[in-house]
Length: 390
Image (tube, rainbow, N blue to C red):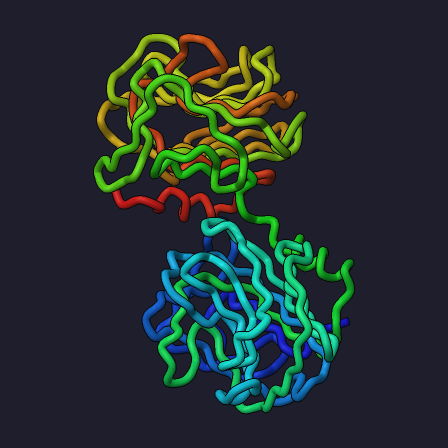
């Protein structure tokens, strides 16, 4: 069933995909982790729209959207519509503790509430059948309560509403409203709609036992965390590293992209690993590394020619894309070369700053480690290379 309201929010537009007029104030449109979205900066940004034709009174409905918390510190409205009067407005909000709730304006009793990860994209669905509301997080029912809606149509809002100060600091994408309770299957399909985000992301800005994408991070030796040239990063002292279980990463010849920032503190002889995943055997691992101080990539014993990039004390962005056979490498957003070779990656683990338990430790700084299960686009390559101003 098609939605009665749908705004993808992927670019500036004064009209939703379903025809409703949109009025934007102080918002920007960005691509974040490969997802086109709108950004509300928590300071009076909003998008308003006519809510004519949306479910009113106590009628059934479903609301679906994607969101990423951008440092929200207090209650901020993500999406709502109706009259700003007790029980007459649907109000889905993001809170300072990272939770997402729905209230019916000034009636916060028996609210449904879910707790998404604060630094990852998440998908929310709210369903209401006339007596019970349920909130789903990433396709899974998370909170249910009995409720009586009395929505009185007036106006719709995203990011903030009316004269109130409930401004959200967040990214939003693909907001939909249905005039019925959508099925579990449809909820799961919507939760799988945006798969452009990385499947592994470790910013390395602060000490953490988990990546932003949920994988466990195990520290070996003394990894410390600093800000170098304005970039929050991890410092690997030449005898330290991180590892993570290789959960769901592309194996065999499936497409993959790897993005990383690095700054070598000294030129070291031999192989010095930045990031590696797979089994360390011929053609079974993917690696970005320095070889005698020069950046290179390869698949263990099947390595391309190192690139001329041996400077010390300077940040660079490195990115590898592979469709399984055609492999392309970029330095600071610029195409540096390509190599034809059939990969045969065998899953094992991810390592950062080291390779399994060998002595190929890197000495320097690393930030922004990402792995995608696809070949990233040219636009994404430029965005990733421009993540930090160096």
